[in-house]
Amino acid sequence: MLLALPRRVLLLVTGAQVRELLERSPEPFTPAGSEKRAALAHFQPRGVLISRGEVRSDRRRFTEAVLETYAPAHHLAPGFVRAATEEVDRLLAQVTSAGEIDWEEWHAMFGGSCAEGAGSPAA
Image (cartoon, rainbow, N blue to C red):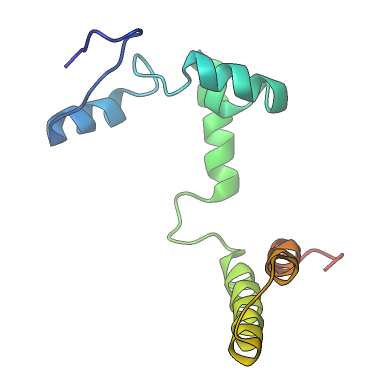
């Protein structure tokens, strides 16, 4: 259904329409609208999300290979799960003993988890 709004908007109302959108994306139903392109152009000017055509296809294949989308879980997932579990356990222990948690403790938990989970030598 196409609505008369300040710009063209596609409103999906059936499962078949959603399926068609997913099967035919990114052309002609690109998720890279003008707002997204303008915002991401500053940070990821050559990113897959705002690319088009064959360049987008190449970037998408590379991204999917790196992220291992063919697998149920990325090969690094166990390390991330372990690090996240350890950090959450520490956070819950702080909350349980103190009855609250402040921003610094919350932020510190998230600041270290990603590097540890990736097996970073800096961790």
